[in-house]
Image (cartoon, rainbow, N blue to C red):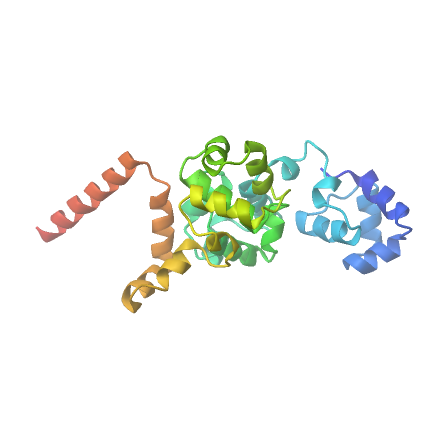
Length: 254
């Protein structure tokens, strides 16, 4: 739920009329009037337009108990998908990922690579930043790698020689790390600092050094979806899958 009274209060403090706000957001005066009176609940995309016009964080317009304000990336994707009337399968197809992997993302079981996040955002016709809220790309990447390696913020902070609070602020996008701090975090994760400031994800960087045949194979969305699912498996699950594949191949030879 949004705090409709806040929108009216902020608009008036900025000496803006409903017409001014409508012009800057591209929304109708009548619609904005209903929003301010609490009769309409705008979508996250519409709320983003209003927050930009009022020069304030979108989250500041949401009530503290709003799901969109307290939930993570997966919940935001699910909310926007439902607002646009898309099924999970439809979004997965448009984003070139498997429905099962998208389900894991929406349930916050995995964090997608930035390239996958951009595909999802494009399929939803929204900016990637809208899905990530205030989180910066640097913070997002750090959090993604940390979670994939089952490292807590405290463990990463200790290894990098920084405070746990600083790691939390960086991951939430409240603080942009200095080059020195980024180098410490990168070293703690055994990565190059360039990884965190590059538009490429790890797969894209690795593909550049591979031969054309393997590169073409790994660029196949179906292969990438399978690899993304495998990356989330435990050692026991991964071993079971390998044994199943071996048994399947042996059965086909018979």
